[in-house]
Each structure stands twice: as structure tokens, then as C-alpha cells.
Amino acid sequence: MYLDKAKKEEIFGQYGKSNTDTGSPESQIALFSYRISHLTEHLKKNRKDHTTERSLMKMVGKRRALLDYLKDRDIERYRAIVKTLGLRR
Image (cartoon, rainbow, N blue to C red; front, side):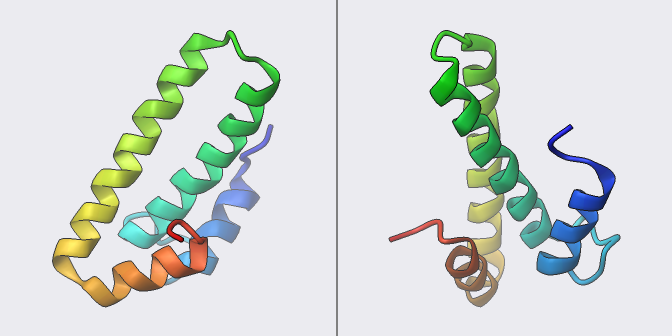
């Protein structure tokens, strides 16, 4: 499986406050970004997988909502996560 418990803990440890910090917007955005990149690679190989394509669009929307939330609450944290994940420019 591409996303096991160890990989989640690694992502949460790198972008959150600790390995068990699953609630912070930064850790959730990082997890969504990892899942989005995995699904994007899957869709490059399987063009006609419309169910996965729909799931990918939903995930992108959820990540966008979290980014908007973070931008409204704390612009510095927003800029930091965008820069570390390389989401813009």
C-alpha cells in the first residue's frame, strides 16, 4: 500500500507539530498533497479511470479549502506551507 502508518507519521512529523499531530492544517495539506501526487501518477497510466479522477478532484477541493482557511487565519503559516510543498510558482 502506498500510504501506510509509517508514511503518515513521517508526513505528520515533518509538517505538523509531532508524529501524532493529525489536526493541524499544515499536516492535513501535506497529506492531501502526497495523496494527490500519487493519484496523478495513477491517472497518467490509467486515463479512463473516471472514479479516481473524481476522487482526485474532491481531494484538490479539500486541499484548496484548507489552504483558504489557513490563509484567512495566519498568512505566514500559509506562505510557509506553500513554499515547502512547492504549490505555487
